[in-house]
Each structure stands twice: as C-alpha cells, then as structure tokens.
Image 1 (cartoon, rainbow, N blue to C red):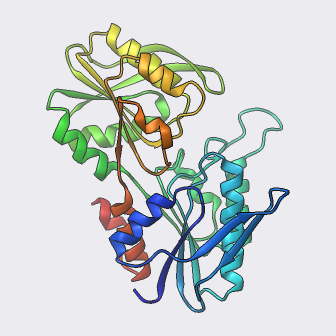
Image 2 (image 1 turned 45 degrees about the horizontal axis):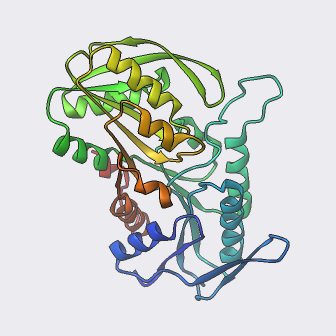
Length: 311
C-alpha cells in the first residue's frame, strides 16, 4: 500500500477521507485554489513518482468546476511521473446525454469521456452509470460498480417481506428486476411520458402494488418530479407504504420541497454526491459507499477481481 495514493478535489472530500480511512492510508496532499478570474490552480505536494494514484472526484454540481479540477489534477499527476492515474467518479456527470435525441444534439457523455482520456487517465472507476453503454465511450479499462450490495442490505433490514420493486420508467427495468430477484419480491413498472427535460407525466402502472410496500428504484434523483408523481400514482393504486432508493442524490431545484410534499415516506440515497444542508430533510437517509469504493480501489491496485464484489 506504500505505492498507493488517493487524492481528491473539492467535489466530495468527506467521501475521500472515508475511503482513505478504510484503506488505512493518509489522504494525498494537494491544494486546489482559484485565481482571481476563476481559473483553477492545483499544487500537488506529495511525491507521486512511480505511484499508483486514484483521484476521488464525482462531477457533481457545480459540474463544470469539478470536472475542470479533475482534468487539471490528472494533468499535474501525469506530469509528476505517476505510474498510473485512475479517475474515481462515483457520480459521472453529463451521463444523461448519451445519445442523439434530437437533430444536431451533442453526445456530451462521449465528450466527457474524450476529455478524461486526453487528460491522461489510465482507468475509470465509477458507480451506477445512467446508461451502461457509456463504458463503451472509453478506450481504457472501466470498472463499473453498483450500489446494490449497500442498498439491498438496508432494504432487507428495514422494509419487511411483502415488497414490490418499482421501476419509474422502462429504462430502469433491468436494475429493478435484479433487485426484485435478490429480494424475492415482485416487480412493477411505471409507464411515463417525458414531456421535456426534467418534466415527466405518469401514465400507467404495470404490475400489482395494492396492499404492498412499494420501493421505487432509480439511479439518480434530480428534481424529484418523477419520484413524486410515481409515488402519487402508487398511492392511488393502493400501495400500503412507499419508499424510494436512488444512488445519486443530485436534488436540484425544487427537489426537497417536492420530496417533503410527496407520498414517499423515506428516500434512501448514497454519499456519492455530498448533500450538504439538504441532508437535514427528515425523509432522506444517506448510506455510505466508501467501503465499497475502497475495496474496489484495493483490488485494482493489487490486480484482483473487482467483479467478484457483486457475485
């Protein structure tokens, strides 16, 4: 472990400290400041020559600032002769723009992948991508982790047996089916029509939810519009209890207000994105993925299997 170092930007230093505590190593020393015009200035104070380096930096809001910090950190570490630089993005920003949905639309998830590769990243470690095919945007190894082990443990301990896993859209069916299988629970799907970005209208529920504990499952919660409308539809269909689980708590705009007013009794999220003052919301429960990320980092460093974490 003496040839392993972990650095972090300003995106989620608390998560980086938790990971270092799990690995029993100190957090790498780097100072990230701003010039008066807003340019990022990075000073790496540890010797990294020939070292296996991991940078913990989710591209969470403000996305562009944190992305630039990551790119400049990587450039500095490569120029300091680091043996290998692995970008650890617990939350991969711009992942929702993974295909052309309109003429002349950009594929920004691919652009970010190109930027990371150009900056010199040797490997990517990420968690619960919005679309699994984003891994194919990279020509370097990508380790895609899932928060499922952490979420499943909490669900089993707190939500009883008579549960139904609910996917809030057709795109999340595979994820919901995997959870339902592990929990021996039934599966339901919400058919919705998206009218505009961050605006969704619930149309119908496919599956039986009456009298059951419904658990809405998604990869992220942004404005919480989809979750709130889905919860209302589940209540109208007779669900006894309604909970929600999402890996990435973006929670932008009116998300907290919508959550407070919704039928959701509890929203379970992870600490891939720091919540800050939003954590004061009584409906939010935060689970740590630091041990999962720390174990993956250790296995990558020692060239052990990462996929066996999810067997």
